Image (cartoon, rainbow, N blue to C red):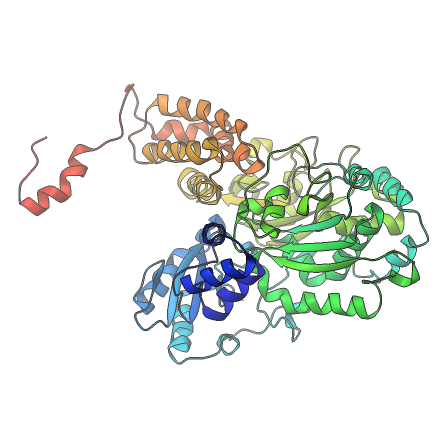
Length: 581
């Protein structure tokens, strides 16, 4: 992966000659190299232009005016998506959510982020490109807050931290937890984590202490700690903020996990969209090595050897699934593995591996410092501690909020400045979660009710739920499927076609029934992406069925959805004949 990323960065694309050279140097077949290149959004085997412009098609980006931004780029450059200007100046590409939902419309240009775009701003940027300006010289706004302003980041991205709790609090002293654990036995740490009842913050909610215990007890010559920072779920951006403002806390969590399970290497797997943070994160790791918080015999504890490296992905939502992430880190396509065995038994390079979310590892540090009972004093019995929420959409204050589990959706709407009387729906947990209606806003966030990895998107009454939201989410799953399972490869496309038929006023009641039944088939998929790919359809059918019923044809049992006159229109025009059908 690193070789491919470096080649793409240096040359602008991965030429055939480069593919052949990589295959020869690594002793691999050309097909193996090709299949990895073709899997990821940000790899290209054709020239991409001196300025590579990626515009995302997330729901919130579209809500905030991305359509006008796209049209302006296309007009000013004279190209459409997946095209490069004739002089090789710029290439225009579409991609999925880039983790900037609180400041859309946003774009990635040569690995730098541009936020809150307008058509006027786009015209300025294209003018700068034609003048050959460096990317840094194209920024006209001041840099963002916090670490975004530092020389190693220099980004206009804003953190938008709206509510701080025990995980995000500012008084954390780097190294304090490491100095504490070296006086403890690894088993003591695991017991404290188990006592806290902290569960994984990536969405699945598996007990963290048990995962660490399983890995510690698993036989293996070497063990690994993975931090999953591949937050590709549309609407999620909390990990981006942690990586920017609390990176030392995160790395300390990885060190603690390594000590607890007996691992010697940690890998931060981070989505390619956050590559602008690379120099900053590497500098923090280097400082930790120089002060012996990473490396050999950490803080004088003989035999406590642990270091961390950063592994970037290259654009694939499915790599947020832990086994697909491991496959990607090994340089392969990010296809989920069959389980068992689980990663804690056979993970990275077939060695026992713990994969934890960014937020989970940060929370583990606070458990070590304050104790499991302290952590359990927050939240609910089943959902202890706090949760970081990425909140965006139709609200006054989008951003990151740290709240205790047990917080209601109604409370959330009040907190972010949404006009509750005008809120039509809230998407809880990104596209793979649930789209809930106002009569469910009293529900609480927690594993016993509404579990979420952290994304909440608010939709006002002016949004078309089926066309703007459900269709977008369904197309997202089609695009991001690895294609390995026939269920995930086929059913979402069938569901999308049914939904489009209904939106085109050709639907009948049977189409609604078909979608409800076909969605169940996806449960046979082998990973979470496939198993939840029908959720946009199924949850909207459950809570907004009236929107479907309003669009179908009444008193009609069958409609193929095929419009023969429309199909003949182009031929009729070419031949000068008029269809009489």
